[in-house]
Length: 309
Ligand code: FAD
Image 1 (cartoon, helix red, strand yellow):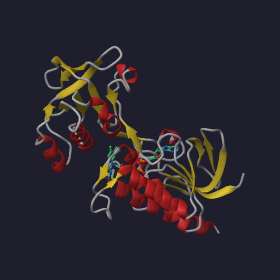
Image 2: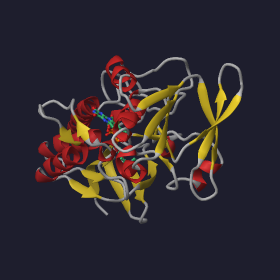
Image 3: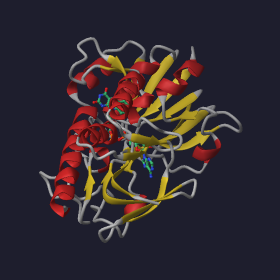
């Protein structure tokens, strides 16, 4: 087994942008894209209207396919496998994949993104795919003329609700607080939509249904009162957790699990290890910011490798 100059873990806008920059610098990066979720979060969305250079918008999967092809064109090696363990200390970094292969690298770029948060209810797993979903783009079609709930008060929840309004008979957004966290424009779009209504100060504390969702129990977050709401589908959009479980003990993480970097660089607390995208960023969480920090991580890795020579 040889030693790669750079291994990149993750295949969202951060990972693929890092790959394009590292490849153009002649570093032949090896990218672990993940076995089932290659392309990252934008694979689950339709129209991306805010990525610069696409005045008419672009479909998320199309954008990610373009980023992958661009990286490959310059020599990035993309492997559709998960990294399941890592050793980031010392000069030679070690990576083991889900298929048991072992790789070594002189530097590593962490671009693992973030994952959907779950409600934490026991029935969530059982009813996953039977009425509970985390992806309106993937599952909205199955809820034509149905009563749909969307849980959450941020931009993702508004985006899901607006998308689902194309299919559902009703779309009800369940919000824990008395107001939305979403940006003004997204909140306005959702609030002014004729099919979308809101249940304020409400938390889903149970989902009903034996083999498919039939409704939920809502608990009032102010009074504690409980009420039942019939529904055919529950879309969970309550935020993200960084995919950094593998990194405990390898690099410093903040209390929420995001990777700590020495801003404005992408340097982690391990020498030669850089981090970018939503695994670092709990403030902006955009494709363009992920791509921007992916670029920075590749440049940081390139400079690190040049200094070793
Ligand atoms: P991600 O896109 O999450 O990619 C990380 C990748 O790393 C994943 O493919 C994952 O499988 C892989 N990975 C993780 N761990 C491992 C491992 N151990 N081994 C191998 N691979 C691994 N942003 C916008 O700017 N405009 C939008 O319109 C927009 N719409 C959105 C719509 C939805 C529904 C969602 C969920 C997000 C949206 N975003 C949008 C946000 C944007 O998608 C994210 O900010 C961006 O994708 C983050 O990029 P990333 O590269 O950091 O991580």
